[in-house]
Amino acid sequence: MKDNRSFFEKLTGSVRLDEDTSTVEETSNKLPGKTGPNGEPWFDDEPEEGQLTVDMYQTPTEIIIKSMVAGVKPEDLDISIARDTVTIKGKRETERFVKDEDYFHQELYWGSFSRTIMLPAEIDVEEADAIEKHGLLIMRLPKIDKNRQTRLKVKG
Image (cartoon, rainbow, N blue to C red):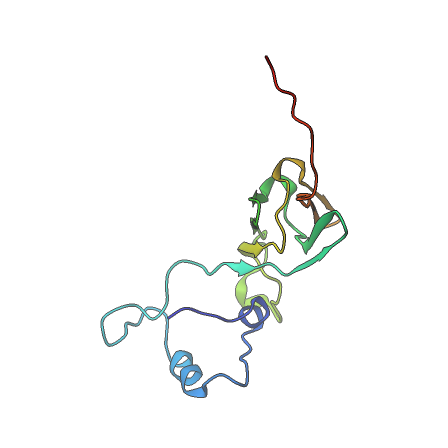
């Protein structure tokens, strides 16, 4: 079963009110290390990836994407771009100085995250750039000008 909860819902453990409550009750009774009726484990051993939140807008010549990546070094971000999609991947590492039982609240997201964004227009991949400043990732993706024309010289 695919988990379609938002990053915030995964982070806080909240549930949408429009969801079927029987599913919530069934999953809340499952314990780590236990197996289901078919012998499959209730929980995957793989940690779940978080999903970045983004702002995306356009100017007449560019598509701008902004995302908070505080706590991640720029060299630890992996950004893949194509003409119509952008994928951002990374991992927030925490220093483990505090035991889990000593926490009163633990709401910050630590671990792997990724986000794939479908772009509303084709972009010039070669001219795209990204900067990170004070934890804010800003990507500038120049739109392809489909009306641009040039003269081609014929070589003899």
